[in-house]
Image (spheres, rainbow, N blue to C red):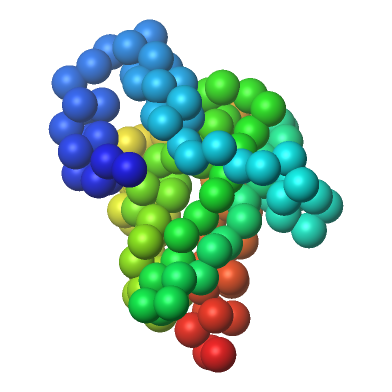
Length: 136
C-alpha cells in the first residue's frame, strides 16, 4: 500500500476529475476481502455506501486491515484512510490523529457530503479496534 504522503503528492497535482480517478484506482489496489468477512459486525455505520473493515492483528503487534465497499469512490476513500494506519502498531494507530493526516486532501471540499459522511465512522472503527488490541 502506498504511503499517504506519496498519494497526496499525486493527488495535489491533479484536478477534480483526475482526483476521482485516483481514488477509484486506490480502491482497486485494496487487498481482496473475503465475502465471509463482510458481516454486520464489520460494517461501518453511517456510510452512504456499504463499507466493511476487518482488522487482522499481526504477531509483531501491528494491525493489518482488510476492507471493501460496494461503491468505487467510497472504496478509494477507505483505501486512503487505511493508507494512514496500515501495518502500524496498534498503540500508534490508537493515538494517531487520522483526521489530521487526511486533512490535506480536503475531502469535504472535493467530494459530496454523501461520499464523505462516513469517513469519521471509518476512522472511529479503526481506532476503536486499535485501542482494544493495544489494551490487550
